[in-house]
Structure formats: C-alpha cells, structure tokens
Length: 240
Image 1 (tube, helix red, strand yellow):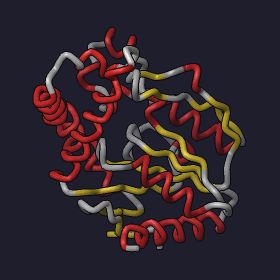
Image 2 (spheres, helix red, strand yellow):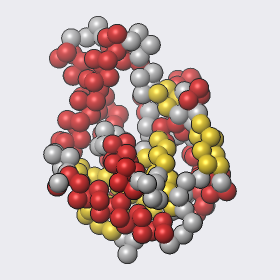
Image 3 (cartoon, one colour):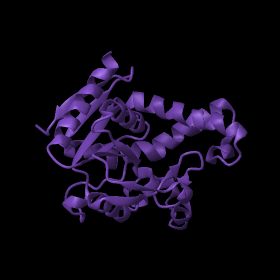
Image 4 (spheres, rainbow, N blue to C red):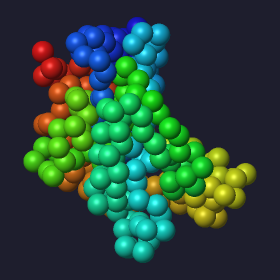
C-alpha cells in the first residue's frame, strides 16, 4: 500500500543503522498535529519483533502547568522555553547507561502526569517523538542528543486541518469528562470551538512552527513528507 512505502523504507534504514551499533536513539520531530505519534507507532510496529522499538513522547519533559502559569508561559506552551531540556538530556544520557526514569504527559488534562512516569531500560531502538530538541550549537553535548533526527513534514494547510480535527476530538470527548482540560470550552458552540481552535493555531502553534520547529528540518538526518492522504515518503536521507 502507498501509505506503507515510506514507513517501510525508514524502518528498514533504522534497522540497518541499529545493527551497526548496540542501540540507536532516534529523535522524531515536526509540527504540532503533523502525526508524529502515529508515525512513531507505525515505525515501531514495522520493526517488531526485531529489533523492536520503545517510544517516548517528549511532552513528558514539558514544564508542569503550575510552573508555566507562574512564569506566564501558558500561551507559549510547546515553545523551547517551556521544555526542561536539561531533564531531557539527562534522560538520554541515562538511557545510554542502561536505564532512565521517563516522565509522562496527559493530553486530556493538558499537563504532566507524575503518576504515569515509568522506568525504561535501554531498548535496542528508542524513538523520542515530539518537540523540545535542541538544535546544533547549543550547550548540550553529543551524548545528550538523539543519534539521528527525523523530521516529518507536511503542507501547512494539511497540518491546520489535522490540528483542528484533533482539537475537536478532545473537545467532543470532554463532554463527559469534567477533568479534561477541554471541558472549559464545552460552553462553546461547534463553530465557536472551531474558531477558537484556529485562533490557537494562528497565535501559538503556527509561530512555533515557523520560528523553532521548521528550522530543525535543516538539521535532520532523514526528512519525511506526509500528504493529505497520510501517505509518507522519504524526501532526504543524509545517513548514507
């Protein structure tokens, strides 16, 4: 199937890279709502059973909402300064040594969830998917970063469509979940909720994409492109 070709190709390349060493740590980044989590799962499933892969979302390394509110950063959530990059780097170093404590994020409550943290033993292949990666030239050392970086790209209009669909999915689910972050928006009509979602996209996620996320594409070892049909293809492979 067409949607599998790019996934199979990148999984095959990751398998070959992992076989050249004891383990491989892969960073997977791209815009909010571009489909990083879904792609990570598809790659992991393709790699199973050997070498197999563990997935860690970098959202767990976001600063808790209480800290973001104190620093007046809630409206910049997802921007570099809202991540604990030192904690992410420390986790990568610990994984290299054999084991790390990994924090978790709850998308329904829109906050880090300490109860869901887990201890992870180093897998043959680890996929770190999300944002918060430091570009080259920063203070972090080589062992503080993934071994290779994958960038998932897509057309802007498609990302906006997927962002709106994701927001509305959480919004609909919040109808029967008062603990959801999205419950506070349930007083809106559907058109109002959609308009609010697009305002969030334009004011927060689009500037973050343009200023901080998209530049990571130039530093990626592998660049993938997803089209409106969710078909993934390899655009560039700089690992060869």
